[in-house]
Image (cartoon, rainbow, N blue to C red; front, side, top):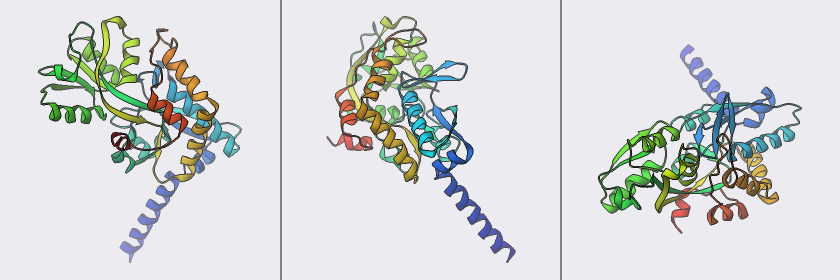
Length: 299
């Protein structure tokens, strides 16, 4: 009997935790605080200026989302906490409730949709190759026998492997723990190329000591919708986030944020990323959706 009661109590406790974790709006209202997952080196999407300060295109979009959530909940004050995440731990930290809303550079794909939810797409990324300008490398076919850097826990690894099988190109993969580390592998000559989201590559090059020493080359390896991420099975919070993002799209604020972060000088070096919004991104702003990357591959 005691075992039965204990089992029932455990189930009830687990159910309560799950119910609380999937009701983010209630959690925010009850605590007066919210935790935003941010990246330390995700190009102009999300990066740190040091001393706990995080900025970027996705960070500003999320700050506006949370201001709208605060208004919706009637809170006079909302304490926004910033939690740095990596490619490896971002999904677990969202799932276990450490992070309420993740605002970095996360690809929305079918596999991840089984574990987490995504807002409508705010940026459609194109995975590319960054190399040293004097390398002579201009396409993935020329990576044969080379060392290629990518970041642990990112979808670029899968993209790379698919291309390797398809073209018969043999290369060695070297992994950086984060995007800054991966770029350092290229910069220091420990890698011949860095394969990653174009925005992250462009942002990394813009912040390099000598940006002219690097260039982005080759074919587009994959097209990936990038979106804000949060816990699964929380329709009320998804609606709140989506409504805010859609309003930012409709007002033109998202396009202005894009210009601010990708086409104008940004801190800390006051350099330009120099990357206008591509057609896929503009289409996502015009027709908001949360389709996974597999839907783009079908085109």
